[in-house]
Length: 245
Ligand SMILES: Cc1cc2nc3c(=O)[nH]c(=O)nc-3n(C[C@H](O)[C@H](O)[C@H](O)COP(=O)(O)O)c2cc1C
Image (cartoon, rainbow, N blue to C red; front, side, top):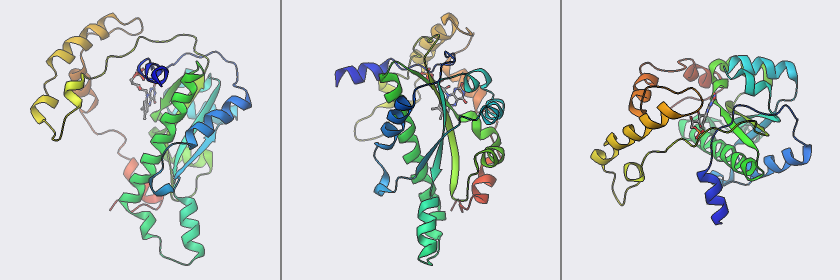
């Protein structure tokens, strides 16, 4: 148990992999670990597509702006929030689909799928493999849908590169526990008191071995949220059958 926590605390995303493909047995273990997480009401609203076709992988690499490591890793998986199976069951019973289409069901599918993704990540790291989540696949959700043949009531949420790390980054310092962990009630003034974290992250960003920067976490957030990202996502979700209500 203690080893698992230490493993989790040593997580860093890997973006530089050996080109060797992972053995099928390892990939099976990873998918099995992903499937073993908790699932809201046991709806198991996740599918995982391993992309082995090189042309498809190259296209996804370009779409996701994560070219090198999506192209070159031991395996590349796409995680799909998936209510297609449930939609099919309801259709066969000739029942309306509004129970599947609403915002709550979409959230449930997203949460289930995030749990599956992190389960795979931890399983991979326990085998000394490296991973990187690839949210960049949401840059062009329509193209990913076409490439992977996704039906309605499915949403491609993120990819995951897995493989043998060539290089591992320094661990990124997380928000101090006092800022994120409360007892009984949320504490707004504590949550936003980020001075010490900004000092810590300024040192981290200035000194890290890959892409050092003169910034801190609050400035990163300012920059990141300066304008809305991926405005096409809501429209895509509607096309996939979700009402967003
Ligand atoms: C849902 C999700 C999507 C992500 N998408 C990308 C991505 O498209 N490209 C990338 O290089 N890293 C991506 N990351 C990795 C994050 O940048 C990384 O987890 C974060 O900077 C913290 O660094 P660490 O994982 O090394 O601790 C993603 C992470 C998550 C959880």
